Length: 213
Length: 238
Image 1: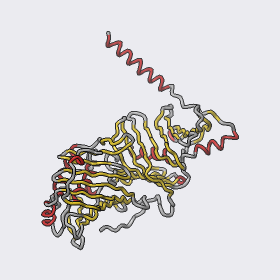
Image 2 (image 1 turned 90 degrees about the vertical axis):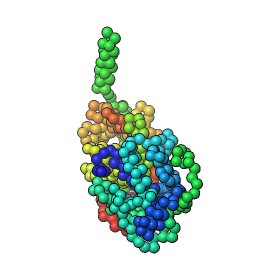
Image 3 (image 1 turned 180 degrees about the vertical axis):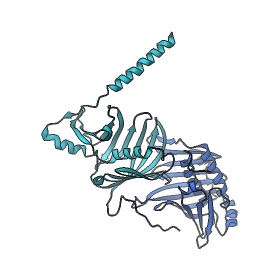
Image 4 (image 1 turned 30 degrees about the horizontal axis):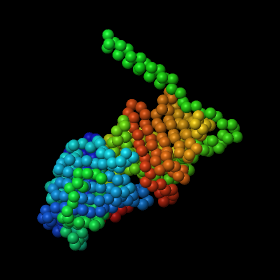
């Protein structure tokens, strides 16, 4: 698939990032790919706070955003920014919507293509089950250490012009919890997500995946 | 019969619109006396900062009155050299557009549809309008009907740029084509220390659009620490 041919490619790239983060929070402890898959299968829900640092050459200090993340197996996700721009991405049974707070309150954003949404869901489903190998878009390698690291590199030239690599650092002592995700777009341009207060398999209200406010 | 009346009316409306358009006039700027001229010109420079600055905005985008999304914009500009570096990214931090303006536009990165032909030039022109003082020939300086200070500049391609500074410190910029049609209108609100908390840009023409720039941060930039020319940056990965 060529990532640069249609208008939906922005959304596609965007949602690839979103789904990556979604699945990354759910990753199991990584001794090897079998471990990841086995541990991921035990995770039914996740809640976490996240901070996002955007590093750019023209920024002397990173632009920091904060928010909350919710996941309920098999395919309910809420990816919510609380600052500096309030925004909510809801994924629910194959339906994805995004809302941003503006001068007229929360407004659903338009312009996303159904195709991109479907790709997202497919990927979320795959990665949330810990299935990184055999992925259509990324090659995955594990670097073993005290805190295991998964490195994803794009398979397609089109995608590699947007994302150079993705580095996922897992918690060394807590299966199912990651420390950070770094998405490198180009030299000097990367985004670092760090997760805190990660709760696994707690109860999450169903309305969080349905209602913005 | 009824159909021909409707067509006749439609024709009349079209002709009237065309006639009125051809009769477009620029807003009147009443000249001030010679003693007040320099102060007036200086007042028209108030919207434009004199030193390099970095702005970060949340930008609401509307096309034809329909909101399409919100992005984050980072703009660094250097007034002395009329240089601008602009980056537009998604809320998630994914860079959609990265370009520099220094006499001409050079695009570092543009993801579809931001790579559309002429997009970069028009986008950077909008950014330039907001942040850099007009570089055209000053033709009028005075006051508008409502008492606002106003200056008129004639720039490239016979574009006309009006800078209007209101008594409450807010300001507007209007650009007109050579047949006096309004092309862009910029309005700055809640201005504090010359920095507006909100800027609204409306583009008129075939496809009307508007951008609402809500300020996230503004800070002076030292040329020594923040080169506008791209540099290779080292980064540690894992």
